Every structure is written in structure tokens, then in C-alpha cells.
Amino acid sequence: MGNEKTLWEQAVAFHGHECTGLATGFRVAEAAINALQSERDIDEEMVAIVENDSCAIDAIQVITGCTFGKGNLIFHDYGKQAYTFILRKNGKAVRIAPIKRDKEKQKDLTALRKKVFSGKANEEEISLYRKKVKAAIGEMLSMPLDEFCRVEEINCEIPEKARIYNSVICSYCGETVMEPRARILNGKLACIPCLEKHTP
Image: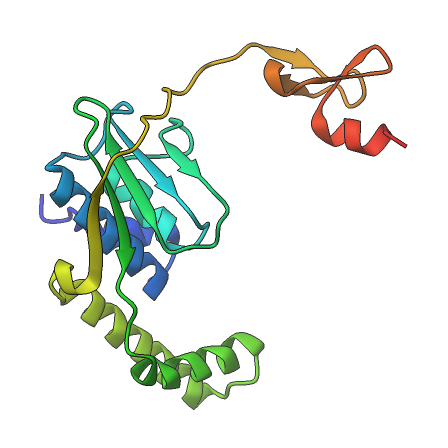
């Protein structure tokens, strides 16, 4: 029984690598579960509304159990590091945002990241970058939650539970499409990509 992975290891295994973005989502998810006094979601009891599509979202899925597949992870493409979590049973909701880190402290890592990601870094710089990332992750995972993120209790409309729709066949590509997403083009059913492709 000694081979059980920690929650962090589970998040890393799901995401594929360690990074500061994943650590952000991990701490946000911890803060949500603490603030809502909840267990990991099993069947849509909790809803997460995320405002970016960063690495953080993978940790949120693993730790909270809110997933795209279950329909209780809702994505708003705002590009913001802000996350809302709601419990259906009592309507309690919190909005969580990481506290901005010291820019001066982050400057070296940011410059190094840019060089590594551009492919211009040498082996020594790549090694230094990995060490700095590892240290930053360690710091993020060990600091008190109230120093890492701001948690605000809010009033929030509870989203509907995920619905299951019938599928229809697109007359143009022959692929199945969720019925409410199908459109009519020249009197035939069309998926959205085919509608865009065949509309002059």
C-alpha cells in the first residue's frame, strides 16, 4: 500500500509535468475545498467556473473533481486568474484569485523562461531554469493559503446541471453533432464548422 500518490503527484501525473501554473491551480483548489468545507466532487455537487485555460485547470479538475466531461467545470475565456466555486446543496460560493507575487522576485525566472521557451537557452541555463521552477513550486505549495490567494464569499447564480442531448448527423460531413448545436443550411442539418465552410 506504500505506492499511493500524494494529491500533488496525482495532479502532476494527470498534467504531465510540474510547473508553477499547475501549483497555482492546486492551491486554488485546496482553498476552494477549505472555504466550502467540502469533499472532492463526485457527481456535480460542486461547480467550478474558471476564467482561463492555463495549466491551473488540470489541477483544479484533479483536486476538486469538477471536470469538463461531467459538465461542472465551466470555462469563460477571460484570460483572468480568477476562479469561482459553488456548492449546489447550499448555494455557498467563493471567488478565489491568487495574490500577485513580488515582480522583482519573479523577474529572473520570467527572463529565463522566455529564453528557454524560445529555444535560445544553453544547457546551463535550462538546468538553472528547472531549479528555479522547482524552488518556486516548493514555495507556492508550502506557503499559508491566505498568503497565496484571496478568497471572497460571493452571491452567485447556480448553473444548471449538465444536460444530455440527442445527436443528429451533419448532412455535409456525416459526423454526429449535439442536436442544439446543429444548424440548418440549404434545408439540411449542418454542424457549425460545415455551416461556416459552406456559407458564402
